[in-house]
Image (tube, rainbow, N blue to C red; front, side, top):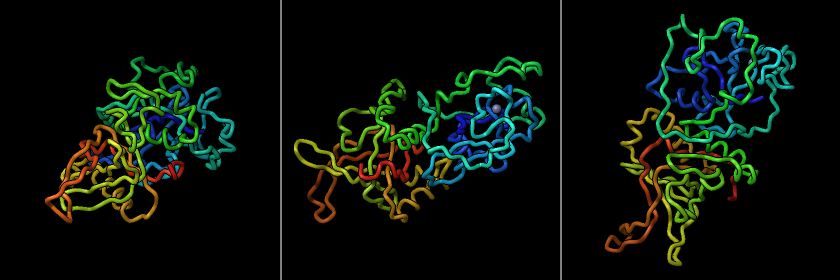
Length: 323
Ligand SMILES: [Zn+2]
């Protein structure tokens, strides 16, 4: 059983595992998922038990993950009868919940919108924590504890502000083309299916403003910036051109997730593994740059400067290998 959301006691809010990862790496927030308490996102179920009835996390703190992050039942986790988060593998009694979850690791919860403004959190004073959910304006009375809400109503993470979430949907479901052609994704004013929104870097001329992705050829570490070179080339007027994106070190230095980001890049440079880059917000354009060997000559390259590190990811993606 994978949870789309979990209730976080100290923030008094329902978070996706991608929200949790974002908070863990955010150096401007005092948040460590290992010390936080996560509970069933079904209000009635959560309120039927005390605060010690918790959920666990998987890949909440690993910067370079391969398997899909998620919340999971712990051996001790209990749910009320009829709770939509009770799975066959983990009955309400919790007896068979041994933590050996056997799902195939796909991200099943597709956000329908990537919000470009970050989600804001307010930490609750500890005495009020758990008393109510700020998203629900109706006070929850003890008698409401027997009411079971429908499975995918307000608990569905319909929108996210964490880029890694739609990227994980795309990566982990890459072999299910029909699903990716069916699921809608909205970013800003543009709506398309996941299949159409994720554009291979070599086809970037097809449309502007998409999520571009491709296999990384190399990452160059310069004084002022990193340059990510893509393996595939763009064909323009019957000629092939290299594609790259630049990451300014100044931008990284002021990034709220600086440490995690540098770890991601360092790992990428040293790992020797096949890595993929995903970015949104800029479209590489044909530029003439001076040749190193012969500075009087120039050559063409499709290039862009990344403007927002929140919408940029370098990661392993085994399902995409050879693509
Ligand atoms: Zn439950």
